[in-house]
Length: 56
Image (cartoon, rainbow, N blue to C red; front, side, top):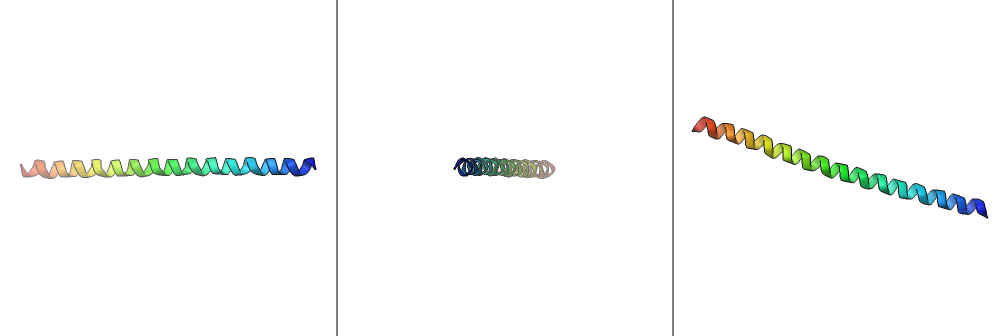
């Protein structure tokens, strides 16, 4: 019947919406990881520079 088709269509839209949300969450997690890594290397770079500067 029409009800069944509408329900299936609705379920399909929900599934697509959830896949898009998880893809977005995954992308933002990767971006957060990259930012954290960049911040860490920048921090170590400045620490290394300070140590080298004090040695020289």
